[in-house]
Amino acid sequence: MQRILREEGLALADPLQPQRLQRLVHRYSPPSIGNLFATPRPGNSDSLEWWTELPGQSHHFKELPLSDQQKLKERLDQRLLALSNLITELEKRDNAAASELRQLPSGPSTENLYSVNGEPLLVHWVPVQSMAGPVTSSTPINQPVMARPADPPRRRYHLLLPLLLLPLMVGLILLGLWLAFNRWGPFSLPWQPSEDETIPLVCYSDNTPPPEFVAIFDTSGSMNLNIQTSREDELWFFNMPDALREFQINDPRMQQIIASPSRLTVAQGAFTDLVQAIDPSVDIGLITYQGCDATVMQGMFSAEQRPQLIKGVNRLLANDGTPLGASLLQAANIVDGKERDAVILAFVDGDDGCGQDQCAIAQEIARQQPRLKINVVDISNSGLSNCIAEQTGGRVFGSQDAEMISTMLLDAGREALGEEYCTP
Image (tube, rainbow, N blue to C red; front, side, top):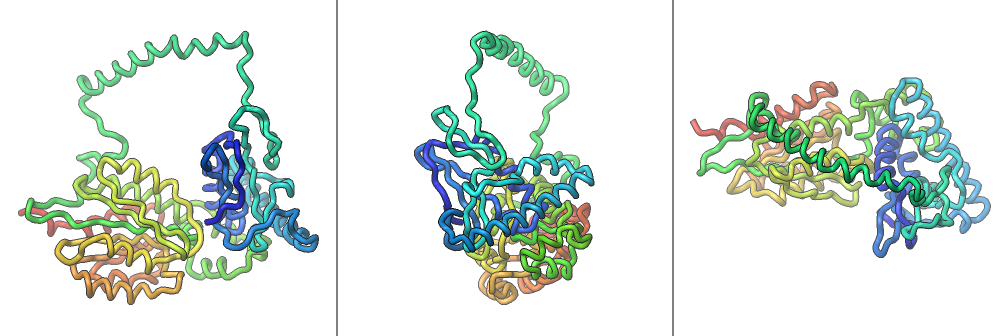
């Protein structure tokens, strides 16, 4: 990922808006449209930075020769038209995402347009404001930049109302807590499994600690496709040139491929169910992708950190390649697998797409770490990664049924953290 622009004294008017809109764009659109919008990030010393996943040299629109300006503008117009057509289709289906996506620019200014290796990239596509308060001279596409005005003096007494209500609100909260614990019994937080609904996935004695547990969560670009997308349709989609894919946006086959629910959405829900079900004694490691360049070790999460883990997984975006082989090596490096049992749960939608042989890697892992088992949950049901489980004594769980995937993932967890660890 590279930084395109850094601006002093600016901040986002709504810090949550860009992430919310980008998540929807990546969910319903191909990567060529998703990468159209630069990612804003707070920088050092009260600055705002704009970043992109696109590789290559960046140039502002005005720095380009006239012929390249025309080509870039044509490509931008094509992608915005494809995005507009997609939003129209979502509106026809009464999809709530359409109203959110309508906030994206439809008539951008070239002042906010960059070229990254010939690909269009927009900055200032959401409102920004000056850290000092006055309106900035940088105007975001399609939307006026407004400083937040001060309250008129005659209305400032309204600010006293929350202060007057505060003691009443605190009293109601304390009363609710007293009733919860004394009248209705204890309650559990939303992320905690109910004891009568979920059987712990692990039990063990002092002499038999539970296995180490690491999950690999696929965040490649193919996770943006519809959960029922076939391998044939996936190849058709990704082998198509970007420009042609955009013109095919209204094709029924294309509409089915990009329709919701996506593989990512279904995977996020299923992973949440798994996290809630795993015994609190087991720490959960998580590895995701960052294109073919890197895998990301998100950390080891204790029971107390599971809300943070769930929230983080639900914020993941899918993009770029599938470094499955590299993620297997990283996961294997952070567990024992020799003196202590270990489990890797690979939640994937295909095979390695970054030039590595995941089958050979799994075979070498099995040789060096005989007590490490890898279970594969294949959300595309393609069978392309079955060898990983076969080489390490794990099992394969595959389905494209959105309602079955959560159950399938729980089964994979129970299989990994099974009864052999329980005392008689």
